[in-house]
Length: 179
Image 1: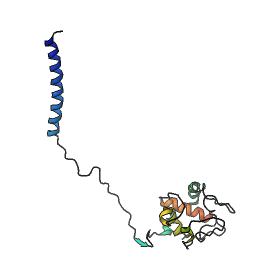
Image 2: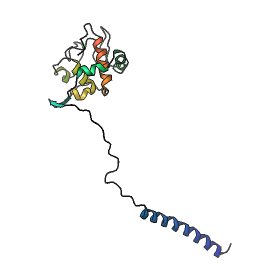
Image 3: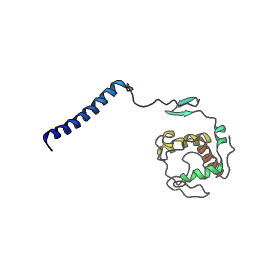
Image 4: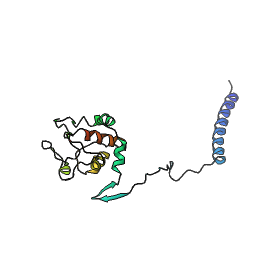
């Protein structure tokens, strides 16, 4: 192979490279797209209408507890409670585990189990476990009562919370009537 043929091959490779680069630049000019200032898409989320009130640095949503309780059922609550069973017992006379025993919890004062060591936040809370309190606490315990040692992430679905509350209420010597 002589040098003339090598020059033709090199020239052909260079021409292809220049053609590819040239086409890339020309296509950028022809098909110019302006990039957005912030990447991503704005997603419109329909927000549920609910009044909000603040009290003691805790934001509470005013909810219709009777409508919420109508969503749940005891059988689902029993299944969902299995998440809680690792730390809490629900049987009558059950022992405290990592968390206190929850038999008779609905209507009981917060921090009232004698042989369980509660956090200072729960001891100082001075309220009873009503349907509303349990609902708020089960959404996100650490946010509802700041300083609690319960590390549970919470139950986001209203139906799940209502079901667990109904299940807790059923596991009592004197279940409260539903609101």
